[in-house]
Each structure stands twice: as structure tokens, then as C-alpha cells.
Length: 269
View 1: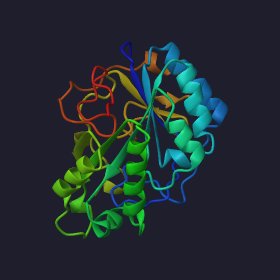
View 2: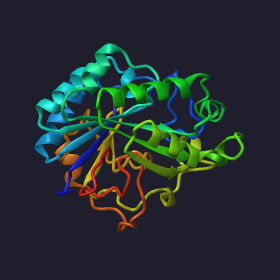
View 3: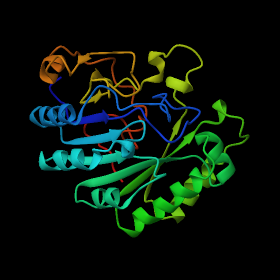
View 4: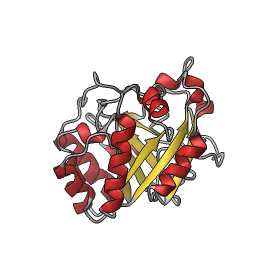
């Protein structure tokens, strides 16, 4: 892989929510895995040396990792831009300080303009109100933020999901970039074994994912394709053996960005 520009860093499998469709199968019983802070710092330094320009901290819920602020600092010091994909359920003062740093942006998922539908997806009562309040707080602080409305109606019993109304509400809240995506048949969203049909076709093209166990994947959705483990093999060695996957289909690839997963279409707010 010679065109590496972007990396997902899945720093934890722990999350306050238990969303019905979670591709990472994360939840309250998840863990931070085998990767320690020093391992993540080493991985970030290697990514910078390999030409990566931006990373996305993801989970699970990355804000539950106690060392997220220091990892963000290390990433920025390495000259990379940062996006934090968060459910925005519980954000304390220290995290707001981190989010407010130049070079940091946020992304979040949203499911409906009504609390009952949104909370039915997240399986946590009150999550809609907390996420909405923190969206408002982020915009008040002028923190770049994008949001994605995920159509998960096929995996829940919430009835007709109000996705259009959710997009309209996000716009009213001041979110300038609102994307959308469908349910991905990976993790809890899978009716059976995961299929390559769930991928956009750009795996191996300019992006890589590193999990909390150290596994390296071509994409956070391609979780059954292990390229190696960064805990026992240098990342440059792992990626030197990677051939590009199938030709790009041009399909949208959430959560990286509002468009394709190509390196020239980075996450944007």
C-alpha cells in the first residue's frame, strides 16, 4: 500500500449504548483490548511516517478511553488531523478542551428527531436528549461537526423511521454536513455471516484500520480480514504485503466520510 492517507483507530470496544445495528458489536461489556497507550502512540507515529494525513478515533465509544486526550495530543503533534467519532452521550470538561483543539473535528450518528425512535435504536433511554444537547454544545463552541443519519429500520421494531425529519433537525441544530447511510450487515447488523457485498470495494485503497486488539484491517467494516497484528509486526511490514482489494464501486462508505472511502475524499464537517 503506497497511497496510505487515512486510518481508523478503534481504541475501545466499550460503549454506553447497545445499538441494534452496531457493526463493531460494542457495548457496556466491551473492553479497551490489548493495545496500551504506548502501543497506540507507536502506531500513530508509524502511520505518520507512512504518509497518513488524518485519523479517526472510533470504537466502541472512544471518549470512554481514559487516554483519548493524550492520544489526540500525540496525533496532532505528529502533524495529523483528527476526527473523533462519538455518540456524544457523555462529554466532560476535559474532553471539550480536547475537542476544541485546532485540527480536531467530531462526527456522530443520529437516528430520528423523536426520542422514542432514537432511544429504541441505541437501547438507552435519554440518549437522544443527551446527544442533541451535546450537538448544540459543540456548535456553540464552533467545533467542526458532521453527522450521519443511519437507516436501521430493518433491524428494529420502531416502525417507519423518521430519517428525513432527523436530517432536517440536524440542519436546524447547525450541523452543516449531514450524511446518510444504510444498515451494514456486519456485527449486530448481520443476519448471517458477513459478506464482501457489504463493502464499498475500496478496501486497501489509501486507508487502514487498527483495532483495540492490534489487528489491522483494510476497513472497519472488513473485520473478518486480518492483515496482521501491530503488536507483533511493524505496520510498514504488514502494509507492504497488502494488495488493493476489488475495484472501487463508488459506493458511500460511512463512517469515514460523506462520500467514498478514497484517500482524496477525507472526512469533512
